[in-house]
Length: 183
Image (cartoon, rainbow, N blue to C red; front, side, top):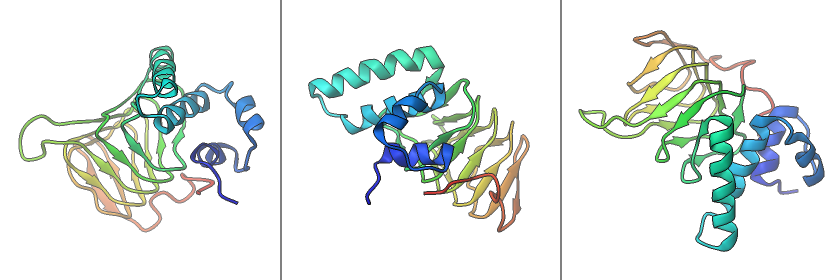
């Protein structure tokens, strides 16, 4: 059976494949509610009546929940917001599959210098609370970015980044037990 992107996102939270009704019941959780609205805004991204409607609904909940994530942002399936709290993601950033973001994360652009641009984040990346990722950098697959880390450099796959300035430690088990219910 082919599951929708919304079902895959909600699977990450519960480890269960949910019906449309079960998804609606779970929308009492602000994180899941916001993901649902974000995915609807992405699904109807054109200038149709539904597209405009979902963008207006999304804008309301961006303000209510403190999530600055836009429908233009490319986000892979299995997106997981670990905690309710302020998030800022540049609309030109790219985020891979099965990624976790905690509260206070900033994924932003750098406006000058050799790293001018927007981050590209691979699959199965866990980003801890208050981490900052900026610039035209690439984060590989299976990377853990520890809370309060500052990352403005490329990070190879299978790594842990810790601190400010961030330091990289290679490990094949970087996100083991951090990223559950992968899709």
